Structures are given as structure tokens and as C-alpha cells.
Length: 133
Image (cartoon, rainbow, N blue to C red; front, side):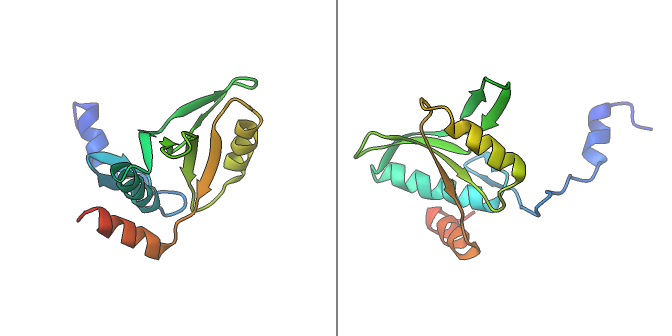
């Protein structure tokens, strides 16, 4: 028997993603899916090239009317227009996400929400262009 609960946690098999998404670590940051990691690579390149600025990961928005928290994947500012954009990378749009999206969009003060769907080919290109991972 293990005395330390942390040791027991290490022996448990890793929990598999419901939609078979494979997590990936880039720049020391763990992303829930390869698509999200690839989009991060694209956004970092856009930031480096001056197309966007103020890139944030996992911005939190509180949908206060019903006490729900929505955590998006990215928030950034377009350099040319100074417009703030919130992005979520989705492979599958679940019913819960669709509800949170509608609630988010009901707040006129929140930035524009963009949903990004990435094909397997685009994921591979983004990961290879950013650097060997």
C-alpha cells in the first residue's frame, strides 16, 4: 500500500479525452488538443509579425446572470484595427459550448468571439512552421 496519495495518483492511468483529443505541450504550456496548440503557434507567428498583440491564453469570462464561467482559448488584439478578439478552437461543438456561446454573445460589452476549426493538415503545418515539437 502506498503511504503518499501523490504516489497513488502517479500510478493511475491518465484520463482519456472524451473526443480523443491528444494534449500537447508547446513552450512549456499544455494544450488540451493538438489543434489548440497549432492555433497557438499560428497566433505566436502573427504576434511576431506584428499582425496581433497582447496575446493571452485561457481568458476567463463570467456570465454573471446565471453564475457560469466561460474559459476561452485565446484573447488578442488585432494591430491594424485595435479590435480585441476572443478565440476558441473547436473540433466538436458540444451542446454545453453552444449554450455558453449564446450566453457569451448576449453580453454586448464582451469582445467578438471567433470559433476556429482546424483540419489535421493545418494542425501539422502550424506545428512544423512554429518549430520542431
